[in-house]
Length: 149
Image 1 (spheres, helix red, strand yellow):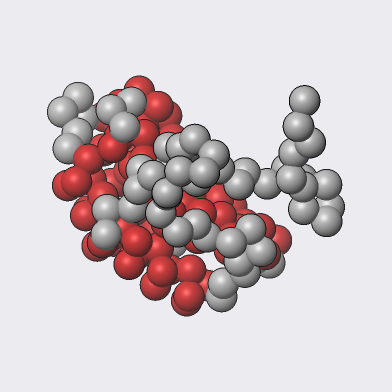
Image 2: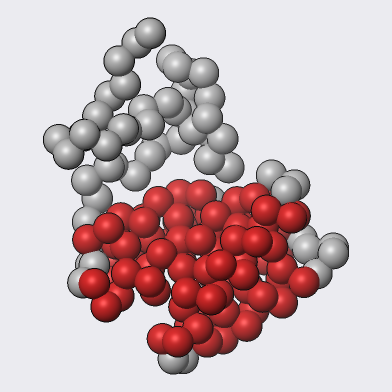
């Protein structure tokens, strides 16, 4: 068995290339550029970059940016960043056709961010609403969340 690449703290890194929807590709395949494992954006940088990526239809990569902020944010902000990242993963599931997984992640993310006040209460309401729809359109859902972020 091949040894996994690990960071200095012993956590595994996923070095496989990914497509625009975040799906792993075979080793050696050409994928889209990834967010570095040590990315530590400020709050403003994370929101701006996540908006940009959502505008390009790449919620998986927006999730990685928000996850970078979640891992480095002050303790009192971590639920917010984790919840936003989960909503973006929900959008990723929606793009991949997994409506049930999308709905579950929209709910989890909304639960985490709803106590942070406006505009996060509105994002939470919208995420829950998207999760309740049987005919969610991935492109429209990504655009709605981007516009609220």
